[in-house]
Image (tube, rainbow, N blue to C red; front, top):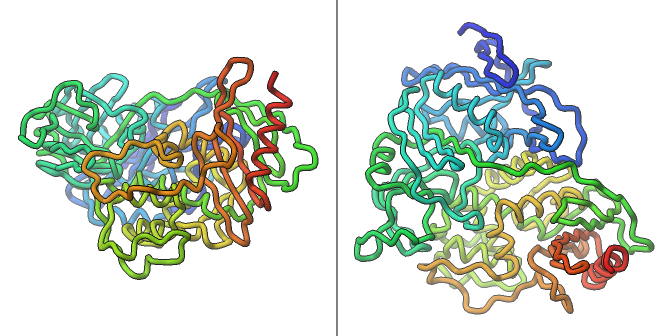
Amino acid sequence: MNETTAPTRGIQLVRHEEDRALVVRGAFIPLSIQRKRRAQSLLIRKDRSPMITLVAVLMTIFGVGAVYAPLWTNYLAQPTLLTAAVASLSELPELRIKDPVSGYAVAPAYGASLQYANRAHYEGVQAALIAAGASFIDIDLPRARVRQFTRGVLTTDAPIAQVPASDSWCAVLPGLYEVAAIAPEHYSSHRDVYLPQSIIFGGNRFIHGWPLDANQQPVLADFDRDCIRLETSVATVLATEAVTGMPVLVHDTGPEPAAAPEFESKVPHFPTPYYLIADASSDTILAVGDKHASVPIASITKLMTALVVLETIPLDKNIPIVEPSLIETVIPRLSDRSQVSVYTLLELLLLESSNEAAEVLARAVGREEFIARMNERALALGLFDTVFTDPAGLESTNVSSVHDLWWLIRYLKQYYPFIIELTRDTATTPEGVTDAYDELTNFNLVETDDTFIGGKIGETKAAGQTSVTIHRLSFGGTTRDVVIVLLGSNGRTADVGALLLYLTDRFGE
C-alpha cells in the first residue's frame, strides 16, 4: 500500500508495517480538562481476507472553533478485546487511532461517539470506507437519508420515514456501529408491533420497514414507538445486502458547548471533602471540594452498568436467572423467577439498587467482558479518575471522583434521558412487558425534597453514603437543573440538604 500525504482534516493512508498496536487511554476529552491536543489518525489496515481490501484511514483532529471542542473517538478497546469481537467478521474494517508522533496505533471499539457529530469527521470516515471498497450502511440523520454501499459502490439511497425521539430508549446516537443481526420479521414486545426487515445494531437500535400491528396491518403514520423507520421496500433491499458485522456509520448533530466556567468555591465547614454542585443548564461548576480524588462510589456504579446494558443488550431480551447471580441485595426478588426481561432488570437495578439484577445483566454478556466494557466506556467519556471492578458497586475498588460523576450524569441526562427517567420512576413501561413488578421502592428519592428529578444513591462500609442527583430549582422565576455529587458522607440526606441550602443562599434571590 502506498503512502499518501493527507490534507488538513483529511485522510492519510498508512502502510501496514507502520501499524504497531499499543494500548492507550482514549476519550471524549471533557472541556473542563485542559490537555494538549495531539493530531490523531484513524486507519484501516489491509485485511488478509480475500473478501475485502481494508485501507488505512487517518483523520487529523483539530479544533473547529473556540466554541466547539471536538470530542475524541469512542472508547479505545484493547486489541485482544477487539480481535475477539471481530475475529469471525471478514468484512469488518479494523479501525485504528494512530499517533503520528509515536507512530503507534490502537483499535477503537465500535459504539456511540460524539466525534461523529462533527460532519467533517463523519464524511472523512465515510470517504475512507468508500475508498477501501468496504460494504457498509450510512445513516445521515440531519438529512434524513440512509445509504448502503456495496464494496465501495453506492447501491441504495433513500429517505428515512421516521427516527426515534431523542428521549427514547432506542434513540440513535452518532457513532460507528456494526450489524448484530438481521431479522425478516422482528416482533418487538416492548412496542407490541412487528418490525419487518429489521437490521439490529448498537444493542437497542433498529433499522426496519413499516411496522405492522398484531393483525399484520401497517400502523398509522403517527405511530411513534419504532426506531429508524424506512419504507418496507427500502428496508428489504438493505436487509438483503446486510451481513452480520457490517459497519453502520451514523451522523447526527451534536452539542457545541462552550468551555464551562468553574467558580471553584468551597462550602464552608462541610463534613466531607468530596462534593460538587453544578448548574447542568449552563455546564457551570458552582462549588467543588476535592475534585479529582478517586474514592469508592458504591451503587452509583449502576449508572454505568445501565449505560453499557442499553448499548449492548436488546430490551426485548429475556435473561435466564442462574444461581451465581443471586447475590446479597437489600430486596431480593429474582429467586422465584426463571427469566426476567432486560427492562424489568433495569428497573430493579436503578430503583431498588438490586445487586442481583446487576449480576444477571453482566452475566448475560459475560461478566468479565461486561466489566471491561464499563471501563472502556469510562475512558471514552474521559473519566480518568474512574475504575470499575464489579457491576453492582459492592467492591471498594469501584472508584471515581466527584468531577467524573458530574461528567457521567451530564452525559446521561443529555444522551440517555431514559436512564434518568428510570431512576425517578417516571419511565413509561413499554407495551408487551408482562413481568414488571407492581410496586417497587425508589431508594433514590431524597427525603423532604421535592426538587429531585433523577440520579442514583449508594452505600457501603468502604464508600459511606454516596449520591449523584439532579434537582430542578427556581431562581428568580428561571428554572435550572442542578447536579449535586456527594461521596464519603455519613449523613446523605442532611448533606444534600445543606448543599441545596448553600446554593439557594448564594445564588438565589
